[in-house]
Image (cartoon, rainbow, N blue to C red):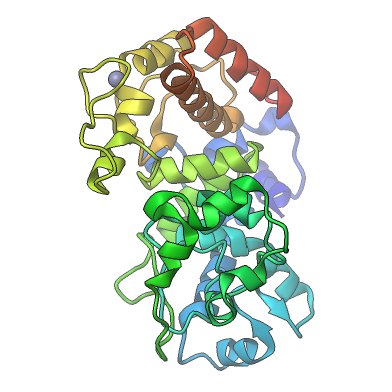
Length: 349
Ligand SMILES: [Zn+2]
């Protein structure tokens, strides 16, 4: 479909050659404020509309379609007695929906125990990976796990790491975290920065994020990290201090700034040197709108978002290596890792 649109856009015909296309289709489909022409990428747009449908399934009370689906499927996992291509297109987008929303728990029936963020600590599958790997099924709802008890949802023999995550790590243990949760007879409430005042998902806000974070070749773990960056939710000292876990939020590398998302990826002296060296212009960019980073013309437009994601990820890992494993900071090593990762996902940069 996009091939036909591209041909019509440049030549008014059903088919065209690359020579007729004056700029890349990726640039044409970027928002105007980011140097594009604002033509919508249909695949991204379609995913946004499907995400809005998933949101209706989780929230709508006035939709007979949503009510019917809720009677035939477990909404927390989107599995049940429903078949068809439309349903098959919705199911793979559930992890993305779970990543862009948080939940205020009511009866717990539409919320995934492991994959939704329903506790302050975030998704339990991320916070307690060893324990999650011992779950009989990670698709159970909060209602199911709380009714049966978390131990009944785990395989009998836990590793030492999983046992620690279950009940021995101070106030971060799963047992303690969930013991304060009381289910009610109210529906679970979905929250997101992408909601409009009427409670529906904003397609415009969704489009920018989905296009930048999810529609590229970066590995899922890198995409998820980028998603946390955009939402200012990465594990940094500013956030740990807010939760009273530490009492000093100064950057461990430069000691001159507060360690927040912007400082870690853009502001810290090592990060600034990195972006300068790769020739990226950050003057119009922020970590909540990282698609506004200006890359040099030598980087193909269609690879820029993916490259930004890979650089964020490597910069973060490199920084953690220096702080927690006493590694020596090295721009050269960081460049090599970025290049290696870009080659792995077949970017030509
Ligand atoms: Zn710093």
